[in-house]
Image 1 (tube, helix red, strand yellow):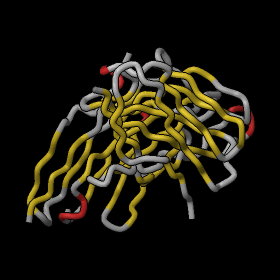
Image 2 (cartoon, rainbow over the protein chains, first blue to last red):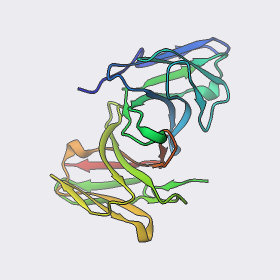
Image 3 (cartoon, rainbow over the protein chains, first blue to last red):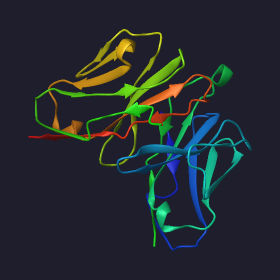
Image 4 (cartoon, rainbow over the protein chains, first blue to last red):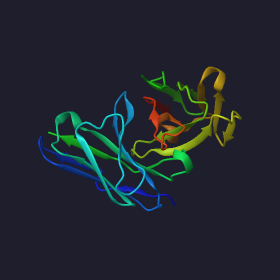
Length: 116
Length: 115
């Protein structure tokens, strides 16, 4: 069965703190993604990774960084949290098909982050 | 520019009514993929269906059906005989060829089914 887990369901941090959001998948997927979800905006891609140690910026990378040291784990880092980063963060993974092909993404349960 | 438009913000129905969710997409690629996901109150996105641009055959799966029409760039989703458990936010998403599978989501449609 497909399984993507995220380290926390709810997180409260203070402005300026460094925040780590962890995502683990057990499906041996090559691709992993971080999205943030805000009301009325749907999900927006922050960063993605198509292999270990590889990363690519998504649509809204500003204020975020990522780390992929192991295939199963993809971390999202907020170097200095700000109130406008209060949001729901969703991690996803998918198989890598040939020639940057498209496969179904499977999502974790999300982390609701509040920055005070 | 918004590539996936879900014009309906919220739809409220009474149990057993049918509900249709609209999705209009925009792409210049000839090869692309469309998805529907469901997000129940628990928050996790649940994959429902995936279609590629070369397969316009409409599909029925239980109470769910999908209508893909390239001519109007639409990929609509219908729930027949809705149930309270169908209450959720439904997202339509587009992935273009050579994109590493990146998804572009619509804003979502909240479906509320009351007994």
